[in-house]
Length: 321
Image (cartoon, rainbow, N blue to C red):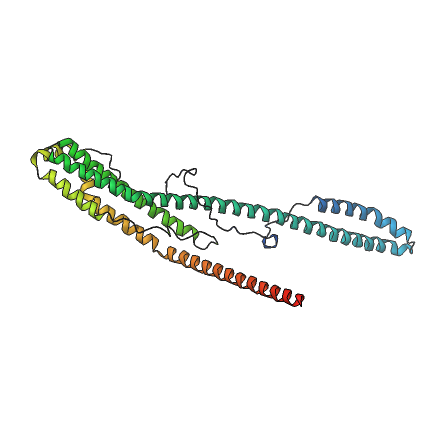
């Protein structure tokens, strides 16, 4: 899944399945006939028996001496033809048995592959929902870090101020990474399900709209601006802005503050594109048609059951009279 590691013991609460195709023996086309011991034996025994019995039988019949040779050839061809027919029967049986074996193996392979892909998609779906659930908390943590940074600014605590700025940037960077990971799973989810029979739902169907990080980014820019316009804080900034930090996805703290807005805007745009892509629309239509068909079937079964109950009630009333 795009190099995203998922712990199956944590993210395995779903059990949707991709339907596996069943291969029938009659659909198998053999590249070469199956090996048949019975065919080899029948040819061996048949030819030997024909060679031995043809001369013997021709003399038993006691024809004129001039026709003995012709009878031998006649009986030989009869024996050869019978052997050939018997060998064909054994070969056909061997071919059919081999087709059954191949069909079972291919069906098992398809079933195993479908199960493996289903497991991956279930884990990706669960993991994506987990990541979505983290988004509001990450924004809250970023907001809290910025509030602490303002307090440190008021106290003229230079380094702690920039520490909290870095923490806020780190939380927003994690928010950005979550969006990118969700987008990656959405692309793979819809691409994998296209053209397959399955009971998977829409990707993140019950999720609320993603929280908007724009106010936090503006707050980050305003709060960091306080430090940049104060020469004492700015001196510390000059020492730290080019140093590598723990802000994932960005080279430095300065890079994170300068490019956070563009990076998040790009990630969110790509996620929206993935969820509304051609593959997504095709699969969503398939899911809609499937759900509609299932609902119609359930309604039909319900009406049939009600009708049966009415008939049984009428029958009981007639029996009582």
